[in-house]
Length: 519
Image 1 (cartoon, rainbow, N blue to C red):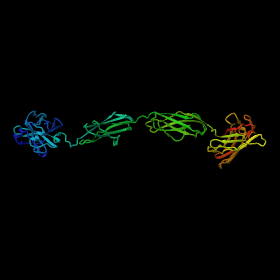
Image 2 (cartoon, one colour):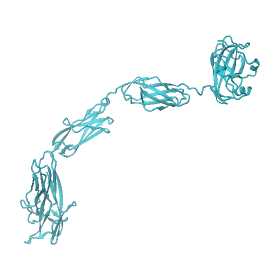
Image 3 (cartoon, helix red, strand yellow):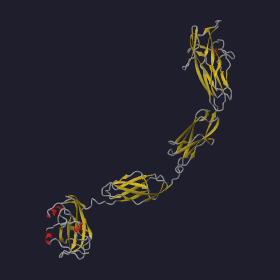
Image 4 (tube, rainbow, N blue to C red):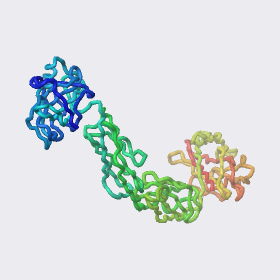
């Protein structure tokens, strides 16, 4: 379309007058655009613009008008009609004849912040008829500085995504996701997504790039996108095209399981036996099922740090074949494994034993007996027998508690044996000189408990002498018994003791140990 217009006066062109009008007042219809030689500038510099194409063939010159606020509404001829660099075949440079501040001075005004439109018109040099135009704008962000980008217009951004390694990967392989955001000056974050689900936290954009490395992609196809959220005014967010990551399931990793049994070789019945399984690699997650002859022992134990431990005191007497079987938490990640058999012999229960310490002090005309462990047994001062052949005393032991909770109700036997009395030096009292009379104090209703036979003391025999048959506690003597099928429960037993001391015994404190054995 050709639009005929006339300049405000040919004489005005000589003064490089600038006319500014609102967009509605512009007479020319834009046929193209121009590009400034700089994206920013000041009011003191006259910029150069380059048209996007050549002028219409009918034209032979050009001029430039500036439109804008504060006196420039009607347009000001900032470049008069001329033809330097004029072209009808290609874009050409147009040097503005005045700086912006000089143009304002020409019409007696000042520049203000806002939009100023520059229209380059291709004209007939004689008639000034306009045949085509090239338009663009300068945005003054202050009265002295301008830019060619609209500060109020949202600039589109683009986000592209690359995946490394590309193609198909094995589950557990680290995959690096790289988002590239344009313009590179954009600021904000990128949220990488697997379908609708977020992959990790949002990553800050640095120099137009954001990266995330993950090894958490499960087997299957994953549509990955990068979503850019802008924090820069005037720059919009954007989302990349989806990139499909194919993940194949990894083969289950081989494991090995070893078993250590403590104690090794053999253990007494009812004693603790500890089974420790070690799984390699130590990162393998799962549980250990301990077995005895192929049968499970207890519940599975969770593996922690590559090991699992189980303790039991319930193994029956006899030979055992123990193993540890690893059951992985994820069969796709780790394979199960089983240890070699470990043999253990459980020997029959040998019984439990305890002891009391008995001490006596031999003084001129007195003998004292006490029991250690805060439970003293004190015998009265020994008295000279009527025939003056020996010293005698007696007392009662502390009560003994016998408790049997064993499965099987085997019955039990409690016996005692005393050591020779010693004053800690070279003097002593023969153990056979101590005798007892066992007693059953009480028992559970289900028990059948019988006191042992009375054992008389030897007749004040000398230290080192052999005890007469059946006399004294130098040999093990029965304190009480419970028959098979009648031993489970609690019984209390003790005994009255009597001691006969030779009159030749040197004064001093004598101590002996009475050992009580339950079996």
